[in-house]
Image (tube, rainbow, N blue to C red; front, side):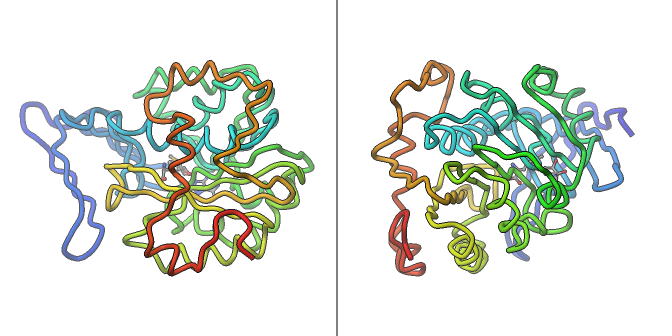
Length: 294
Ligand code: SAM
């Protein structure tokens, strides 16, 4: 159904994170859709602006999407010396793609989003995002990202996973089988980055996934950023590479265009450097040494 409900009253959206806690928002208007993969909703709210909800979980809000999308795109792309070919798995809201395309070095961006209706809904409710899908450098595929990486012959400088949380269709994107395939399709000089849940709610998941990353890649690092509309408001990201050893204090800036920094609202080179400084509890839990921690 794409006729909005609500006019004058507030419709209360509740995202339950645990039995006794979660997030709620009052929406003036709500649009609901059902695809072959998930429930899709768009909320129009005073405080958060437009909100994209998939299977009851907030994916993107106007108020804070820039933080998440800038950090998932620019940290790997500024870690790579010359990112030309980028694969984004998931990302149907267009935010990461928008940020990736800000880099003139990028000549090809493949977006592998399992659910075409997510893109259709985003085009309708976020027309400003819609344009990025039509960029001549972009190819949009509506496939399962795990299937795609197992079968593609293409190679990439950067592979970014911007999927929903590791349940349902996204679960496979956090498996050793998937990571092994990503290692095959990313150039030895390339790197992989993914959203990687909350350090406060999902520490066991992060620890287990971190070990999987260490098995798949030679260099692994975690970084964080505040994402207020996500559970606990503090989000974790992971990066892995084969030959590219990355040091946030020594970014390969030579010859890189950094014009995009005039447009970013959260990401900066200083934020990039500081994002890899992790809290003591995590360092202790992981016996973590940044980068090569084997
Ligand atoms: N920023 C959000 C987060 O951190 O949860 C993710 C936003 S983006 C909208 C997530 C997208 O991943 C959704 O559009 C969903 O359809 C897509 N997705 C989930 N599983 C997938 C898979 N196996 N292959 C490709 N896309 C997938």
